[in-house]
Length: 44
Image (tube, rainbow, N blue to C red; front, side, top):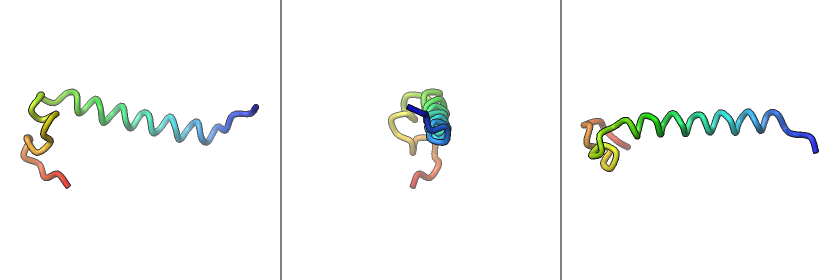
């Protein structure tokens, strides 16, 4: 069975995006992690 390289690439980019968002979220203080409005920024 042949692998679809394009699909593998898209999945890799998606996983890296999730990782980057998690790194920034885990770096926040606990109050900001539980309540994104804690930092004073507008959240949609």
